[in-house]
Length: 331
Image (cartoon, rainbow, N blue to C red; front, side, top):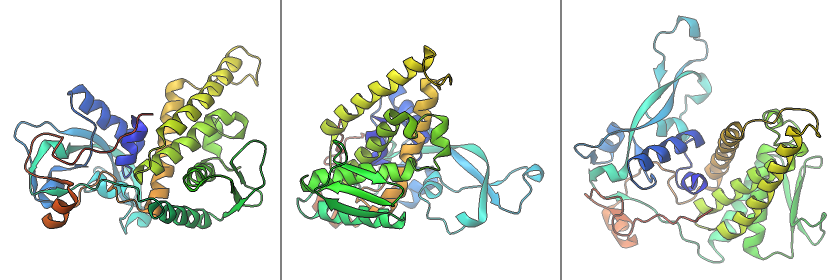
């Protein structure tokens, strides 16, 4: 559920996605789809329905980098969690986070007014897949890695990442969509599991604890593909379950004292770390691949265009406006 929602709302951090899911579930509502603050909805021509209660997320308080935090009483807060989280602010390099605050937001189901564009990603065989492949290759190149396709196989793997030579190897015997999935998986390793992965080492997600590393990489692949309308829940589900068993085996080994003697992190700590790392990696990838999915940030479009596509929600209170049901895959 967290990965599915993160694929829809990838501009939000994993922690805020979890907060939104929990609050809406508590109220008996469906998963969040588009979320913004009160004023942001007004700028989009929509208004919060009377009697609706806000959802809460954490937003950063920021200040210029030369500001002494000890002398601050009320640092300038980001105008909207959407703006902060999409990374588009030109001031990002000149500011620093000095604290956190609660930010009130509302889901589109809590608003009415001007019809709003809600894209529904669809895969066009041979077109979308090719475009995404090229975008992922570009992302890998931006990280200093080249992508090679060959008939050579490393062990039983369909692909692998060579950090020493800065290469990602993908099996040519795979079909186009499988190669795409493997490339997204390997890019997950590139983002999270290099030799300098100091944070991962704290939680055992480096190469010395491959189970969790594989869970993280496949979670990245699943989320990125789903954001582009490609549902790999069946393949990813079995893969994740298998490697999760390895994580439990390592946990049991450490508890019994037969391993390195290090005390295993709690499952809650691992879950928090994994969700944060996966969603952060996905956001950096999706900012390059640019899915039609808006990432949870509302954007208006011409009514005629939206109506033609059938993904328009008008002045309705219900979450399920005609034609706006998000494509969700079970995982």
